[in-house]
View 1 (tube, rainbow, N blue to C red):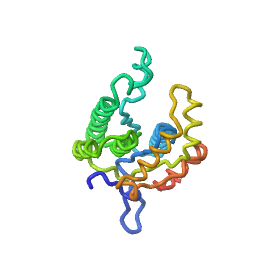
View 2 (cartoon, helix red, strand yellow):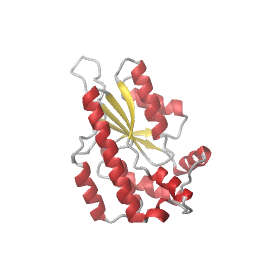
View 3 (cartoon, rainbow, N blue to C red):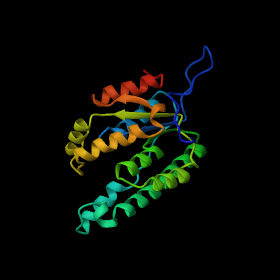
View 4 (cartoon, rainbow, N blue to C red):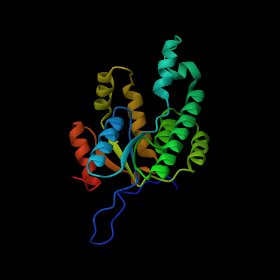
Length: 216
């Protein structure tokens, strides 16, 4: 499978320092801290002398929701329908990842990616899309190389919901958060993820990620 992540950062030659991965993806359910950690990890790596930059690969669902509210609808699915929202989300995330990959090649940077292709596969499963929809998505995203390492930020749905409510600009039901968590764990890519306990403070999570990258 082209998008399978490695179980850890790229190994170094025997006796040498650990080689920094060129592509680092952070994935997980809403409220797991993906955006916070991707920004901080990129900054920490840059401060340590690596050409690291933060790259967001969002699918636009949050912005669709804002537009929906502005025109008097409840959310993105109320505006575009479930199928329409998933199609738009898949297309926008594909374009975002394509842009990230192009920048990585041109600038020879270490890309710390907030979300990646597996987030779309999990979203399709969590929103009850038909298996054919995921197959089409996998064909489309197959163009992109797998990340050198994919960190799955594992968080209890209760903790995630509390964080979402605290940030104050959107909501998620406990049922959906549990379904989304199960969707990630059901992916064929999941066994290759580096699982990080994301229930702690942001500082504790950052420390755990940096330790896996050999930067602790």
